[in-house]
Image (cartoon, rainbow, N blue to C red):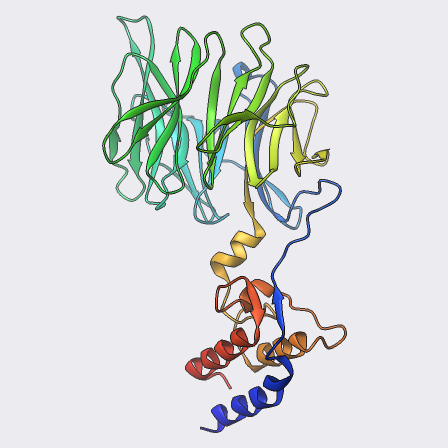
Length: 381
């Protein structure tokens, strides 16, 4: 009772002053195409055939580590539910085959070990319980590798084949809601972008142009991005966007060099690889300006970026009401939030996202009241 009386007293003091005060949450865009805070995955190699690709993970503090293990030529890393969970493809040293690997809080597991197949292009399912990829085998009748889409259960390592067609199917990824699987289909070495409706198995063509190679589909929210040649005569890659109604090229493209490997960060914000300065390097576009990620680029090729934002990480892991970001909700958070709502000079919230307890994209007295209720429930006063 004493704890609750203290909180009620605090609320009664501040409520009349802040009842009409509402502060919208907003994010100010960078003016110089500065990459937002987060984790970045990418790989680099001198040449694909050199088998010297290395996979890197750069943390928000700028620390970069190489993801290594009993494999070589690691590439195409993709984040799961957190920056501590990654899937990637690499050649198993003992089996000498392409396999799908899982990196989970530093532990690395080969999910397709000794399968006898080529296993490539992994992406997590929306529920995080499985990984979709392409699986290939040598076809003596076709005198070439045949590739279909497959799914591996992370817990059991059981593989389920999803397709079985004469065409090469590659680079699969799920839509955000899991309704579709987007992928590239190659006919006579020319790729098109297709999708499968997961509930019915219905196949649709999203993009196909005569003589134009299209590949590497990737989804962010309700938009699909992929790479395609400028034309049948100009084989420079450009990044395309499909918003559900129309397909259009991004403004960052050029007919003079390649722009590929789309890694959407947010609306109009994109990490990508480009040959504008020779080899493939990593670049970031905020929709207006483009900056080279020069601290990461080398004299060889940087490709296959994936990004996990710090804001998303905080949203997934934040304690409701923990505005001072110390990992727990206490009366100190309540007092700090009150001062901020009253615009007390030099008052800042270390984690403003945590204050939006009502989840209405506004910070106001209603969040303050909810914070009080959360404190009463947790009995931390």
